[in-house]
Image 1 (cartoon, helix red, strand yellow):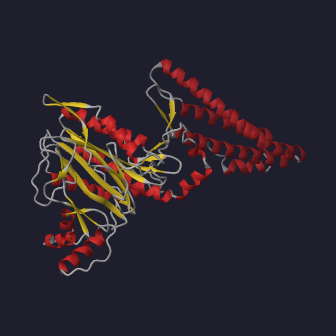
Image 2 (cartoon, rainbow, N blue to C red):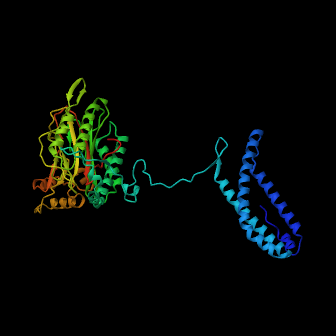
Length: 507
């Protein structure tokens, strides 16, 4: 809206007619309103649409006029009092000042209305719709994944796993009281930093295995699969010496080989369509290890075998809890797994648990920390305790249900309890220093030594094994021609509840 020119303002304030002034201002207001109406009305060709738009414009304009009138009434009340008390010329000047203030208010209101109109758009139905501003969210993951988990969650609050209530005791008492006990909740909070380390490592594991399932296929070499998986794990966990990294080599055992196989340099093994491949890898933050595994198949004839082992693992997880005997967990696992039968190539097999493979407790920088979780009845009667961390893993087989050492060794790990042992071979001393610096008491493989630039180390490695400083873990196999499957999760026995920290949407 146009403002009053300075010449008119001077004439009115130096004794011009008060009536002329009011007439001029009213004419200016009328012209401004007419101009505003012309701006609001759209130029439509259709007569009906034009009438509807005019009605909308008139309605919105009347609302705006009422709003402006209220503001003018509030603003002009003191000015009217002053005008009644003053003389003619003073009253005229006050009246002009009042009108100028009104115009200023109207200009501001129109400017605000213009900003509101600028934020509005028209949808296909012709109705006005306000545009919403986009909110900035958390940083997303790339494809392929390369953003470290710590950068995806900069506040350090990592996703929790599946939280479950502990199973009831044998006398029928539930463990629901733990979730509301102030004492248990305080203990839980006291260990929050440790739980968070597990959760960060678990989120990395979930994203890596999701990535692996998107590209793994027959025809790939086992070395290619392992190196691609491990490269992704190192990026997401943001490998940092012994503070964060891979907890053990990627197991990719095939068919009758159940565990502890990873290819050494030059291994030509290729994944085939009819193979049953167990992918077992681990991540850690500050030595808090996630041990989690799944089985990959391409031929649907193995689906029943995988279902049996997955069900057995979930049963073991469900039955595990504080004060539960380890042998009782094994008995329930065996009962579930042996209830399944699988037909492969016209022959029916009962799924057997591999009796000499077990789950285990996990300690800091120690993948096997002392307690074993059997998958058959008759194990030790030791009880699970509050604060324990376990890898609940089950293996099902169509063979004998027992494994033995076979094939070339690839997995090694420093003995956790070994003291100082004098070494005579300089190469053995050097290799032990490399192992201590890069792996500590975590498992490693020969490919990882190659990656560090080590060469001609086999004699030194054998010397360390002979002295009991390093323990070899050769592949474990059932009879040839059989098929084995594996599923595994890491669980935290927190004071308030049981958390399946590695649980994901996949299994």
